[in-house]
Length: 401
Ligand code: GLU
Image 1 (cartoon, rainbow, N blue to C red):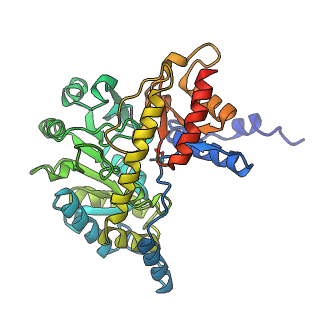
Image 2: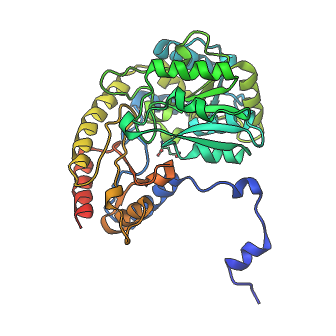
């Protein structure tokens, strides 16, 4: 007789420890759940995935079409085509004041693969990696996959969730291999002030620890903040790994183009790893990214203007919900309200809040627990003002009931 599906199957094969140590990306899980509902015709207020709702700018799409027509559809060098690596270095120098050569640049399938490559190239079994909570969902799992140990440093809402050198210093041990800084932060929107960032760098250099700086949201900052890279600080290069991406800056999430700027031997190791896993980023996506980085920045300015308006509306709307508090994000495109005053026996966790919001109001959000911040939910405002209004109506109804 055929064994019953499910239970029996689990008994008959075992997965490798490295994959058992990690979970499905919670952001990807929310994205999938929302897509499933939409495919059934449900009108979802989708605050889930952090991805621009703007189309990829036309000049970038045209570059991809041209690349297709010119049959640029073959393998490329694993770390990316030479002009793109040069363009990344030029763009980063012009926009953010760094100074890198193409040999210090690798292009990978999104910022996520860059981080994966860097962590897997540097972290040995038992090594510790310092991560500030609230953190982007994938940092701890990538570290665990590599056999490392995530060491979480709590930041404070009253301090706008800023990662501080003094807090990092308290948790450093001889096993610390890396500190991950995420500024602007996904999910909190925290922006590390440049002088604090310089202190974090100095600490890492003093202790011989790598500083991975995730700068994927560099160009979406509000108020007085300016796009900033720690790589603009003189003498930073020996310890810094810059992670950047076209996904957010140019509304190119699906194209999967990210990059690292790092010391050449590390880039060589990351290239070796990538050459044995995914090889090059899709060739036509690389030509699109080349146009993005060499072309005008108007679309980025326009998106920032729109995010600025949305940020004000969503922040005011969320703060108007009784017993919900929310710090003002200084960058990225998320608000991260504290909903803990609404937890009760029927809805004991933020994960339950997110689940019930989706079931009862068709509102997609990501629970704070996924970011190491219980009691919070993440709301992406990379969606139109009209959808934000609709979502706020539903959130109000939900928390009033
Ligand atoms: N920035 C996106 C988010 O956090 C990335 C999605 C992901 O790959 O986790 O929603």
